[in-house]
Image (tube, rainbow, N blue to C red; front, side, top):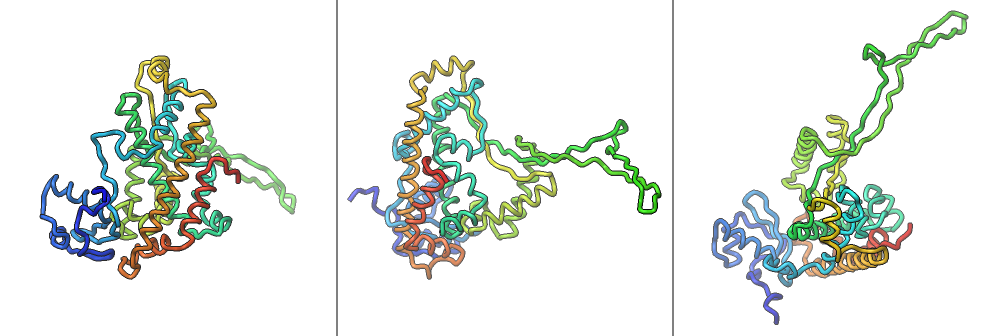
Length: 378
C-alpha cells in the first residue's frame, strides 16, 4: 500500500466527539511527544491531515477521523498536488487583464468568479434568496446553506491560488479590498444652507386661506466604493459583537454552527445604523506589473486568447469546477456515513446528519447544475 494513504498518526485511541482538556493530554492519547514552537506547529499540521478538531481555550475537541490522511502540501513544487484546473484560471485572469485598456480589474469575488465562468448568474441571484431556491428545488435550506458555505470556500481557495502563482511569476499584483454599499441621501438646500421648503397656499372648506410648508423630498441612492478606515473599524466592531452574542471565537464558527445568514443580517443592521452602510463585501483588485499594456501583452503573448480559445477554456473550467464540487460532496458523504452521530458534539451533529442523508449527493448535483453549470438558463 502507498505510504501516503496510511495513517501517519496513531488515531486508534481517539474518536469523534471526544474532548481532551489540553495539548498534553491529546499527545498522550496519540502516543506523540510534547513539542514547542515550530516543531509543535508542524505536529499540529500533521495531525490535521489525519483528523479534524476544534479548539476551545486549551481544549481539543475531535470532530472527525479521516480514513486516509489528507494530501500533504508540498510547497517545494508548484505542480505537486495541484488542483488540475488552476492553470486555466491563471490564463483567464491574464486574458481578463489584457482585455482592459488600463490593465486593471476590480471586481467583487462573485462577479470575478462569474467572469471566469466558475459560477453562473443563478449563484449570485439566489445567494440571498435561499428560501426561494429551496421552494423551487425541494432541497432543504440547510443543505443550500451548506452548499454555499463549502463551495464559496473551495472557489475562493482556487482563485487565490491562481492569483498567488501569477504574482510569484511577477506578472501581476493583487490584493483584497473591503468594499461597501453606502446609502447616500441628497437634500436640496437654499442659499443659507437650510433645507429647501416649498410654500403652498390653499383655501379650507370655509374659504379661509391656509399656508402649508413642505420640505423637499430627499433623494436616496447607493454608492459602491472602497471602505474607509473608520468604516472598516465599525464593520469589524459589529462582527466582534455578534460573534460574542453567539459564543463564536472565529468567523469560521458561524458556518460550523449554521448561523451565517443570521450573523450577517445582524451585522448589517448595526453598520447601517452607525454608518449608513447597507452591506459590505470582499473585492479583488488585480493589476499587471509592466509599464504599459503593450509591454504586458508582449510578455504574455503566448497566453492571449482569441474568442474561440476563451470560450473553450471557460467551458473547460466550468466543467472541471462542477466535477470537483460533486466529487468533494461524494467524499463528504462517504466520510459522514462512517461516523456515529451519538459521538458528535450537538452543534456539529446537524452537519454530519445532513451529509449522511441518502439524498445528499443527488441534491448537491442538482445545486451544481442550477448554480454552477454555465449552460443553465433559469
